[in-house]
Length: 82
Image 1 (cartoon, helix red, strand yellow):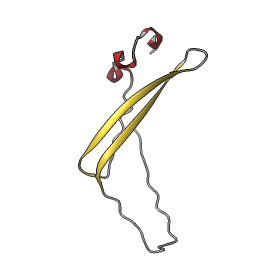
Image 2: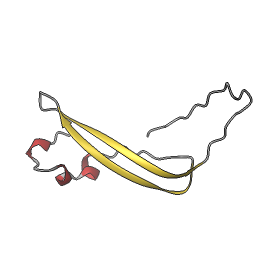
Image 3: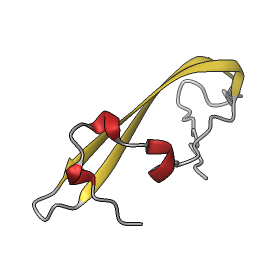
């Protein structure tokens, strides 16, 4: 879907849920985390738009640590996206 974002006066005029819904979720949270989401719209020299979305998530999270080789171990955290 092509949208003329350049005709908008302000980024707050964009109905983000209509055009942008990456469906990200955090799987290992305990309870309900507090989440702040904001978008930035950037244009390149050809007028093509790119949406950058940032999220700040605050809460309690659970991760099983494998400490057999501590302090020389490494932990891998996966951030799956749908």
